[in-house]
Amino acid sequence: MKLWSSVRIALQAVAANPMRSALTVLGIVIGVGSVIAMVAVGQGATQRIQDQIRSIGSNILIVLSGSSTAGGLRAGSGTLLRLTEEDAAAIQAECPAVDLAIPTVRGTAQIVFGNQNWSTIVQGATPGYLEARDWRLAAGEPFTSQDQAAATKVVLLGQTVAQNLLGDSDPVGQIIRIKKVPFTVLGVLAPKGQSPFGQDQDDLVVIPLSTAKRRVLGVSQANARAVGAILVRAREAGLQKAAEEQVTALLRQRHRLQPDQDDDFTVRNMTEVFAAQEQSAQVMAVLLGAIASVSLVVGGIGIMNIMLVSVTERTREIGLRMAVGARGRDILLQFLIEAVTLALFGGIIGTGLGLLGSVLLAHLGEWAVRLDASSFLLAFLFSAGVGIFFGFYPAKRAAELDPIEALRSE
Image (cartoon, rainbow, N blue to C red; front, top):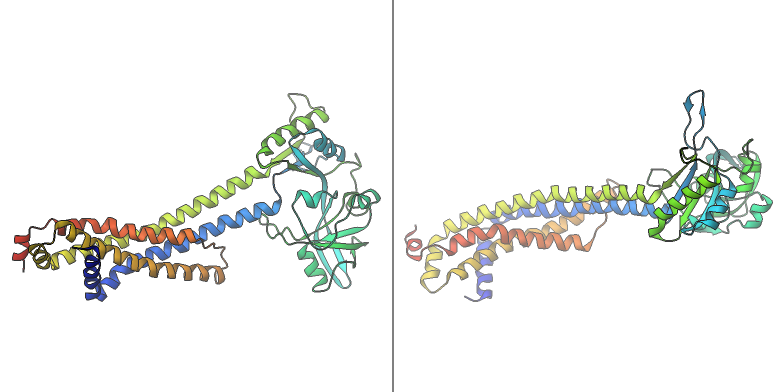
């Protein structure tokens, strides 16, 4: 029996019982649709975390000042300002694995424009801050080393601040007040969205470090050159660990710490933190896909049950085919094609429903989803595999029937 004849007979058998075939296909439809929707949600979550990681900047380390202790009470990181602008310059000059080291200070202030005001974060940094963060400008221009040297009153606005303070008007060239100090808006930062920690990265303004210390946030009474943190960028993606070790060794040397003394600073390798979050998201994506795959197994069992019933009902037909020359492998092929046909029909319909479900989750549930062509192909091939796997036993049982006993069947 030729392959095309087997296909034609199998399709006729499927079409002969439309209600039974539809109910059998339903399990595969639900399974494939669930797999595609759940994998899209999992991949969307992973992609969102990857985007947030990139928004922080590539190969970033953050060096924070240590904690102070008073009366037996230990304050949090940053309360003991031991880091200085000179530390940042030394890190950039003496650590081979480091590309940039940017000293920063940070605080909160009320910003006023006309009759509008907004409380936001004031970030003071040197001109290399935008380069270290891979942060572009949506409009205007950045401040320069001359602005840093002269403590010029210029500011870059984050998107959130610009929208809430100036609305749709062009911010560049406008005068705003930060703690009653007038600043000229040089530019507006491109949007970065949420950080991996859920913070709005666009809700800030960036001003020269010298301006922040002298005119807005103030300076440490103990050391006017002190800074709250140093943003460090490794030269390459694989050098973060080496950069961390070099920075730690250099700062311990500069701060004259003995071998038995604890660090008076903290180095945070953001790559390791974000890698753990990304791995968690990937595990969740696999888990969601595995849970949804259970529906495919259930649908496959349904196919097996229906095919066993079909073999029982068509025993006499099988005997007739064998009597006129059909071989066991022809009968096996015919029933396998029937099972695969049911599974593929379910896969096609399920793929469409999975796509629709993903779109609805994205728009109605506001979930991050990512539709990947490989997910559709995998679900489609998996449905065909389910048809072959669960259809093989009924097909084999049909192929092994004794023709004489089959013809006697009523």
